[in-house]
Image (cartoon, rainbow, N blue to C red; front, side, top):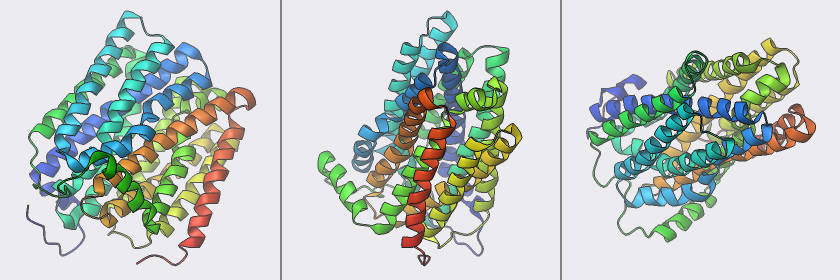
Length: 407
């Protein structure tokens, strides 16, 4: 694959590559379906149980498997064809979505069944994500890697903006089963797109990787790199706090503001809008050089906004707070993923992305479970402020450790 020559920074040039364009379009359709399903699952869990505990537990079922499987999936991605790994995991996800749609239409879904099927999807997603993230570097020209990472993150959050709106309309006007059926179609579309993508042979795939040893080697590599370790720690802390509360927005809407599904969709839309604005601004600028220092500053801003969200009695102020929270969190997410993509050694990216996937999926699972469990006893505000303070303390330590921006 030829490397494009750049005279000025134009991130949209990454889309000139046919195979990356196929990947990008398929990915945004797939993620749109994924967010529609997330909204459907969250609302159905709340409707079936009216329990913050069950809402947090089902959110954990979607993401918690990453803690146990993503690092292994990363070594799998380094040692095998990433597209084959992706499509195998997607086949399971399609079947899960179809089953959930049929059970919903037949009125046979219980909160226990919803938990079980969400757990299946969580396992599938854990095996898929490291291959999906590390595949980008095998498709896009190296000069546009940062732009491709930003485009990928922007499309993810654009889908997060549109998905809840579509899902909210479908749930209120038709039924929740339609959101699950749409998710199956979207994943199948991406699976087809992957079938016609061609990658550079041998990129980031060293010979002779032993799965178990490869997984352990990935952890040793990350632990030995101060910048990678600090960045992954920041992703974990914002995952537990900021992204953890995003899984709890049905309960936030009802318990803190008494707004029901309209408030839920409003909060999700404000969050996604903040992410999209931040992503567009980040995408328009050349790669930064602030490293973990800049990421930590953004994480501090995000956690401060999270605390404001929990403490304000005004729903309108809450919309502003969640916009600011997602704006800062989006910057941290793009900068963090770009740092990991560009600073990881060839042949280890899959394993680094496996650890990253474990953290960004497992962090929200842990956060939503802790917040949901604690909210059952002390209300929603106290645990949200608690995780925000915890994340802010870690971010502050990283700011001090990296106070001179990395070059």
